[in-house]
Length: 123
Image 1: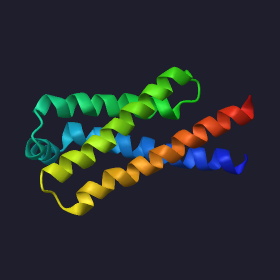
Image 2: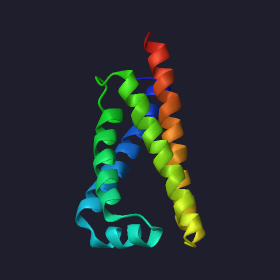
Image 3: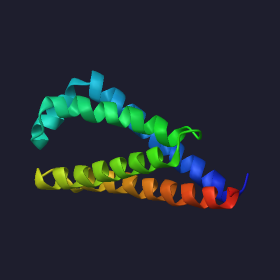
C-alpha cells in the first residue's frame, strides 16, 4: 500500500467516524436539539442532517460505491462544514466553534484529493 492510499484511508476513516458519531448524537443527545435551536434551525433539520451524515459516511467509506455518489457525498459534507462555520459565527459562538468545522473541512479536502489520486494511480 503506497503513501497516497494510506493518507486517503486515514483521512476518509476520520471523516466517516466523525460523521457517524455526529449522526448518532443528532438522534440521541438532547443537547444537540438545543444547539440546533440556538443556531435558529428547526428540529426536523437535525433529523434530516443526521440521516444524510449517516448515509454519506458509508458512501465515502465503501469502495464499491460509484464515483458519482461519492462526489455528491463529498459535496454535501463540504457544504455542511462551511455552513456550520457560518452558522456558529453568526450566532455569536466562540471562535473554537467556528474553526472546528473548518478543520474537519480541511480533512475532507485531503480525503477528496487523495481519493482522486488513488483512482488515477489504479487506472
